[in-house]
Every structure is written in structure tokens, then in C-alpha cells.
Length: 404
Image (cartoon, rainbow, N blue to C red):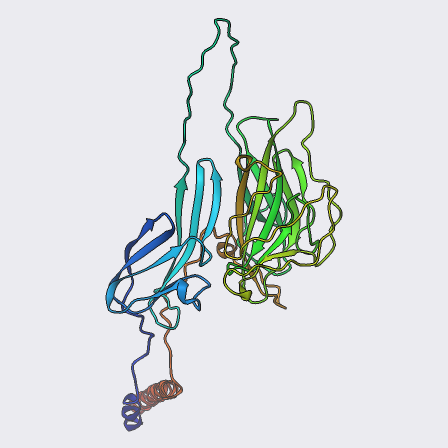
């Protein structure tokens, strides 16, 4: 038995662990907001041999940068390509330019040391003052004016209903609530109308779900909006997704008008929408910059409007002649839709209500892995130790009984 034990001990082999790539991003990215493009550079701990690319566009050479042998990695993104999003802001007045960039240290795969960054530049409009000299008579009329700030608006996708929490991850078919809200420093001063809503997959495939009048086009995607207050709109909907992409980027326009005294805010007069009438206004599958083809015509509202195709790569919606561009602002929301599951499994709260983009990295794990040979060896060692203990105990017992 002792000889068997000595043979089994020779079979012990060390445990195995995965080896991470010996590299990583050092410090914060260096961002240069240029007149026609955004440039971002990353300092790395060791020479970089991976890729820097726009999230979702790895297969597009113009949206990917490869570096080898240098301790710096970077990429330049023009405003009119690579899904660079532009969002107009009224307070402060200007334009936000945003892109999602991934730094991957493996030439082929995403590993746990990789990082995803949301890059954003803000271009503020310059205030211009124009003056002129004018002669007036001695008798003048005084005017009292008051400057009222424009409302600040936001677009949220809530879980369940109007009082739910903002949600970023959901499963197909889950009920959500699309909510548009504007905050104003004064009461009964402004009216808000939501219109020109689109949804895209982040890769140029854009579909219009609310037309320029604010009327719904496809009842299966989003119904006509309800307006509980002067500066709030909302509607329940169920989560859907593109066939091969989980991300959904929503963009709408909100027109702000002055409310007439002792009157109600004017609302869109819309017909009841039918199904499968959402208008496709952008599709990169047809080639770079190709004009999109429109879907079948939707039921026309009482006030007629024509849908205009937009360039596939331009996320900034065009202004329609019916609204003043200085009283209309863009709002955006994002949602990640997961595939249908037969099991009733809800997402964890830390994922469902996450406020920031998920970084493409995995949690560090210290799991121990065995091969089948090592596992058999480990079991044999255990059995040998148990047998040895039994023999020793038996001999001790017999020795004691003999002395007794």
C-alpha cells in the first residue's frame, strides 16, 4: 500500500490558468476636436499590435486603424462617415459630435484587457452682435422685455410605464415606455410636439417611425403619442430589434412653440396607424452614400406632409420648412435588445439600468481547470490516502488489543 502511494504522488501536475495579454491603455485618451474630424490617440504600456476601430464597423477598413511596434494607437474619424453621430443642442447652443471607439490588443479577437470609449466633442456656436445707428425723435415709447430660457428636453425609454426606471437593456417583446419630457423655468409658457423620429442600428440602416407631423407610421413599432401635459409626450411599446444587431439608436425632434394665453397646446391630428408602414430612409447595404428607397406609403394625416430621404451616413435630421430651426431640437435614446428566450429569465438590475456604455472587457476569473488525466490522478491519490489511514488505524487497534 505504501508503494502504491509513492507511485500516485508522482502523477501530480500543476494547475493551469489562462494567460492575459501583457499590455493595456495607459492614462486617459488624447482627443483632438478638429474642424472636420475627431482624432483620438491612446498610450499603451507595451508596443501595440492590435486594432482601433469604431464599434460595429470592424469590417470597414476606413473605420479601423492598425498599429504595430509603437506604444501609441489612434484613429481619425471624419464627421460624415463611420457612424459619427451629430446632435444639436440649444442650451448651450452648438452641436455634439459622438463616436464609440474600441481599442483591441489582439489582432483577431476581443479580450478582457480591451476597452471601449465613448468619444464626444462639443462645437459651440459663436454669438454675434449686430448694431446700427439710428436717429429717433424726442418722444419715444419704452418697451419692457423679459428673456425666458428655452426648455431643456430629454428622451427616455422606461421600463413598464411612465413611472418606470430608464432602461438600457431589454428582451424582445418586453413592454417599455417611450417618454419625452421638457423642463422649463416658467409655467404655461411653452408647448412641445414630438416629430420626425427615426431608429437605426448604428450601421446606417435607418427607419422612420414618426413622420414630420408627429404621426405614427407603424402600430407594431410605436403608436400615436399621448400628451399628458404641455411639455410631455409618451407611448407604450414593445421591444424589437434588427435581424442581426442588438443596438437601437432612436432620434427625434421636439418643436417648442409659445403657448397662447387661455388656450390649449395644438397637437397633431393623426389617423390610426396600420402595420408594416415604417419608412426606410437610410441603408448602407446599397453602397456608400447611396440614396435610400422609401417603404410603402403610410396613411396620410389630416395635415399632409412628405417624407424626405436622408443621406445614409448623416445622423443629424434635416429641418422641415414647417418649423423654425431655432425652436426645434434633437433628442436621442439608446436601447440594447436581447433575443427571445423560452425561459422566464429577467436581466440583472446592474445590467438592465446601466447608464454608461458597456466596456468590452470581461471580469477577471481565478477558476482552476483540470484535464481528465489530472482528475483521475487526483481521485487515485485521495483513495490511497484513505486506504493508508485505514491500514494504520487497523494496526494500531490490533497492537492495542494484543497488549491488553
